[in-house]
Image (tube, rainbow, N blue to C red; front, side, top):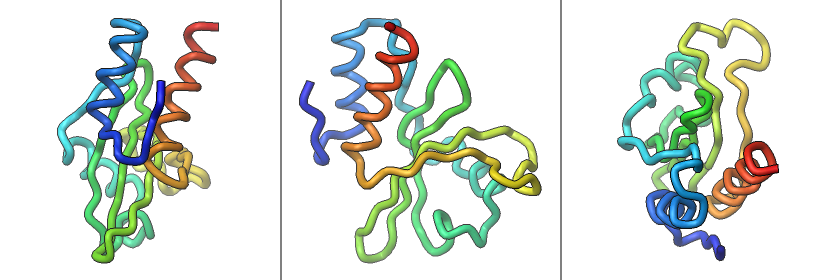
Length: 121
């Protein structure tokens, strides 16, 4: 499968479901779904959300990992997977856990590779 920077998360999910069927455990969610929770857990002053438009692209059904993108007024994007806790864990060092990516393609490749490694090996 050739993942590109132009591929939308929805196109990625469709390809993964075609290849792995219902076993693939990530799904597309509404763009603002879970954004409020992310801001609650990170705090409004966090660099990922401060002055940026944030949207949720994908959610893992096996855990609370979610792929978010934030963009600034210049079009610069940050892609991260956050493991939301649905609690006020920002008071604890290192929460919520996150994984940062250089771009959309690297985030989608990470999801694919993690799925293969964790669920198909």
